[in-house]
Length: 141
Image 1 (cartoon, helix red, strand yellow):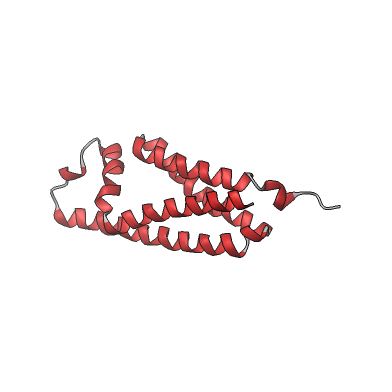
Image 2 (cartoon, rainbow, N blue to C red):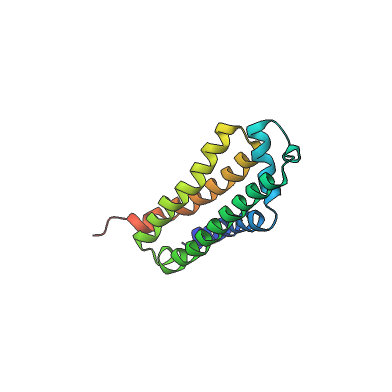
């Protein structure tokens, strides 16, 4: 269980770094996505208001991600670490939606940077969840 908790702490910290990048340097995060979708660099946007709107949207998404990460730490230490099933299911559902949606979307738009980023998060989530699977779902005598 300790190893799984450590892996999930790393996964949450990893997501937290992404969220902080989205908040404080949104253009860095937006660059690969914009290029993958448009085949143009982000610097090709000439309208400052449009770029400001895109950056604001990315910062807003970063805040949502940060609040999800904070909630994830509460779930990890209040439920998952104590082998409560709701903690396991919470990580599966919320983590699965976040990482798998990001991975699928990145694959669809062919954003190689985001594919790698999302794949690492997905692997950390799945390893952290399935390593202690028996502690959560072992048949009780």
